[in-house]
Length: 247
Image (cartoon, rainbow, N blue to C red):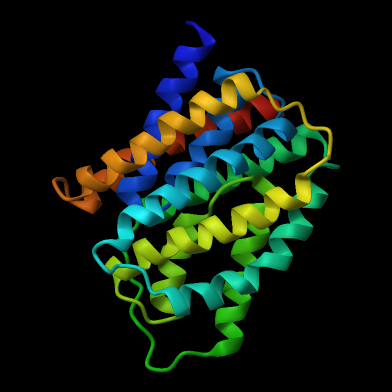
């Protein structure tokens, strides 16, 4: 299939998932770039950060209209992840391709399992600043290291650590993803990754348009149904990546 068409289709699917789920969809960007579009793991994680930053910012804008973004709370949570995202982003460029692929496969599997499990997160009685800072830093490190938004971790953390309701957590996670992805991308500037803009540009454009459609889709289909469908797809992708890396 033509590379441009593949980039457009993959971008649309990822944007749709990100806009509908508020996170988790971006985890498919790296395997799509590697297995469909021929990027190396290192270049794929860098390109993914470009795509995730632009798409998350667009999805964030789409969510601001209904008041589902807690700007102050989300901003503080995101701030805790900026330095870890930057440092992890710089370190990832020096790791072997196999190590990056295995790590990504494990994170993708974790994401899928987390989506399939019923949400047990309850708002806390009291917010613990130390725990909130630790969760924000950990999320930033994951984003920088693997080039993913980490929304599958951000949403439950925003609920269980910062006390946001699920609707607000979904919108606020996009703020966190945007900030962390931008920090990690800054760290990778000038690293010499092979960035094929003729692929990244249409991929990103399709993802941005998909994010708007995903927001509308979320109002018609229950979030739980969307999560289950996406989780099973992600499990298959994770298994394929681990088998490919190990064997």
